[in-house]
Length: 357
Image 1 (tube, rainbow, N blue to C red):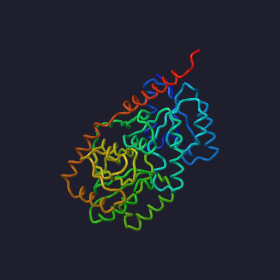
Image 2: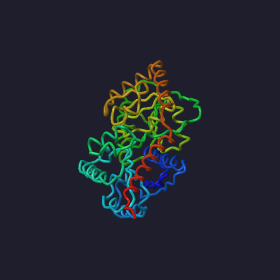
Image 3: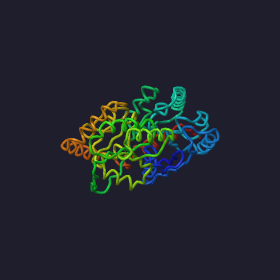
Image 4: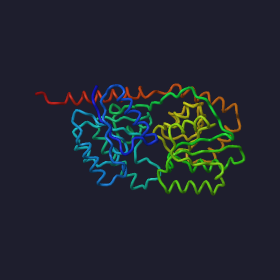
């Protein structure tokens, strides 16, 4: 098996989708007996300082030529191309979604990131993505050849037999960073429109942007939802599991997802899903398990919430469909096998290019 390195910025233990994916993938690769070194890069990416960029470049340049390096998309999409050109090792880009498509960026910042990512993609030996949607974006918007892209769907750890412990009033659970892309503002507006129904809601996720977090708190309070909507911040894996078991429905008014691992978690727990028809979501949430509405449409979101909360038969049918979809999800062993195949292919290609002695 080809040895490898996995370059990830900051704390790998962060409980957000991209970091969860990469930590689980790293551990699954190592569990196969493959030597995979974790390279911890500075945490500032994609908005790294010059000092952080220089440190990351030095770490990457030190990897030997026979060791492919998987580079996290927050780094790969933003780092100076000179740092990648200085590497001896072949590069495998791990892209969850293009950075320039992040919601809330200024037009100038979005253009810069899209141009930077396009240039950096020409320097990668291969690109690994978590969904067919992201693969299609790289082909159509960045001109990456399909032969250079591999889809490695996220794996999921099968929980022990789940004992449901639904709360009363019914719990509407949302899990996602307090960031513009996650659409929590839309969810709050939708919840205000069904205040005549009996429910409670919890939003779990760290404050990605303090200004957005403050605006969400103010919005909740101004809508008169302070006694019904709770912001829970970051929770441990065990506490989050308890939230899923206690929930009645999973709701995320996202504006874009490159995959959306929280939907897989919701399906593992047999939760009906209410979300938006955007990005990879229609591929991730199968018909029957979820109700999908347009983005930035609080009225439509409120309508499907009202329908699900008011129709027990619909809830039972969607719960069954969600649980069935969860049972079909891949494991991390499956994901590691896909990435392992990429590592071995890139390693073999590098050996074939060595000049004969």
